[in-house]
Length: 532
Image (tube, one colour):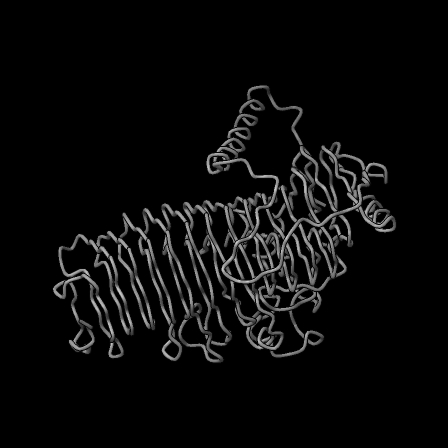
């Protein structure tokens, strides 16, 4: 069993000082980035949710005022090269709290070592300030397998570090750190990345006969850090999550949840998504800080046949007051998909800052997913130094060759967005048989862009008070019907015509006060496509 690295007591003073200084500088850089992005201290009280749709009233779950200190149940801090495993002690404390009707299970300050922790209803697992919990690196400790959803498909697999199965009134809180020590999971995944099953094929057979994950005897499927499965009245608050095997906070078929003031550092983790809302409803996600090896906040609802059959949408979601920095591996600050077969609707995202992310606002789905992404409201987001697209809708996520039910993206309203530094600021791509519908971009400012907006197969697209400054042509539309431009300022450095419209289905274009001389039409677009 691997343990956290121990200090070398024989090292020279200079070597130890340098190592200590390097470690301190690393921690300081991370903490400084977080602190600089916080305009204000996180408020203690949860502000009312003022969403443009109906959703449940959300408040913190309450627990009996009784504390169960894990030390009273045999827990011991880490010492030396063979840390004491506290799994049994932690579960004795949880069981005692359950029998007493609930309460706070306290992991006090210090360093602690454990295998997975399985929660119970009416339990608040509290990680105290200055507490660090290291999770075992022995995969056998994560058995027996438990039920979960892996990338949109149900499976039996190694337990997550923290697991809540069909619970009510449950929390993980505190100011301490949970460290999954994910390196060994990542290395193991690289060895077995093609061994644990094809998710698009296994959705065609029942779970009991599904060749997918450890439950089917297959290796390579990593657990998530934290899963809440079919649970209700959930709180995750204040903690830091580090080096997850894969996704971090994963809510599956769960509702009435609050995730706030959580710091996720999974930058080295493949698929290290921050908060994953997966067929979840009535959720508030706020004041969180992300440096992730995949999407910061992502909404999903299942894959293909299984997701369509289960048909549980992700809905009534508010994501606000958060930051995402250095989000990597093709990912975004706020993302919808690609697993969308249960549908996603009624989502309000506002007040966020993205810097150095691969993408900013992203919608991704494909043929086979089916269902609808609709009624999405995104406001007040600043983006800087985005690596690919700042606003990206992609209905061809895995390429155009797939078949199956086609998804629909409609009724998306994005406003009050600033984008500074990006190759492709706006890219919207619909399917030939199902265009994007009813998309509004309002009060959007783009500077330091390589390209301009690139629009393909969209019906009823409105740009209002949009400024785009780009090196290449500022606006290219291919098969766009009912395009409305109002107070649009397009500047490109080619000194040519800034708008180009092509595609045999383009039409009903209302350019507002943009002179016709600023529009170039492709050979298959007639002059009658431009409305007076």
